[in-house]
Length: 401
Image 1 (tube, one colour):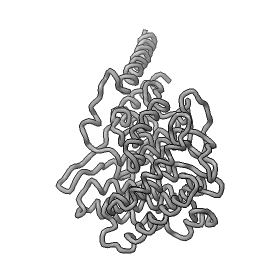
Image 2 (image 1 turned 135 degrees about the vertical axis):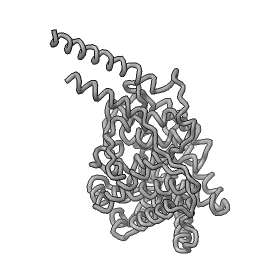
Image 3 (image 1 turned 90 degrees about the vertical axis):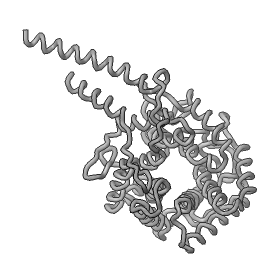
Image 4 (image 1 turned 180 degrees about the vertical axis):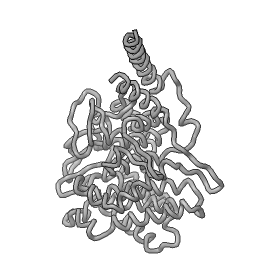
């Protein structure tokens, strides 16, 4: 038993030092670990993981394809458009985007709502398209260019005609995070096409600023057709929104990130994680949060990796990433990497999207040991390791005597 504990602690300590395998060539830099994750997801999707996830999550089919496509888009932005990996990225992202648009996929969402199919579906679909455009996948594709233009204009009209900045995802139910994805897709269209919607974006942000919770953060859920809150800020939606908010309003994103960090970042056994509920408030897990352990949310922490990375806190981003590496049961076989032994591909998709934000930047590995999560975890863990090793050695000595 003691030997097993020593081996487990040793394994965790080894994985805490994880660093992605980057390969740099004349065509750009590729995160080979991310590619291995995407290859696993490709296989999982071929085997019906999208339909499996739909049976578990209300938006499972769209979510897993959207995250898969977004991860390929981010990878493609770091390499030459003439490289083979870029061509693979374009093919994979385009195929997933196509599946999001299938009639059978749209049927998961109600049509008799404004906007039709709801803002979750419209927002995530157009956000994927915006990132495909940013990666250059829409060049020479007039149909997709037209779709991006028309859908962005449609979203602007829907928001402009709505009574609040938060449109319904389902009849009578509004989640601000879904609306932010839609607004971010319009903001990305705006940047790529001559700032046509700058006035709309400014007006939408102003509305959102007038609809914040008591912490000054965007709420988790609001009543339909109203800015009145059903529930204030939560870690899962804050991590997601802060992964894209800077694309809409960089100043607002910086301000909200600091509040998020103060209210949701905690350390457990020295390792960083993101609370599902703000400090001082308790709550249980649900379909939005995923598992919650000692207050730390699974979804909040995994997506929080991306939020911290985007806002320049590489130390914390790496700490959460490596905590997932230590405790997320990663397995690599045949050039494919999966987490949780491959039993929950939705988690793999979120992890891949978060990992796509990393680059081989030296700042990401420049730790201040006086502040670092590594010191907070390694010192006590190695102390326990030493004590267990001493006990094991003493027991072995007594048995010899």
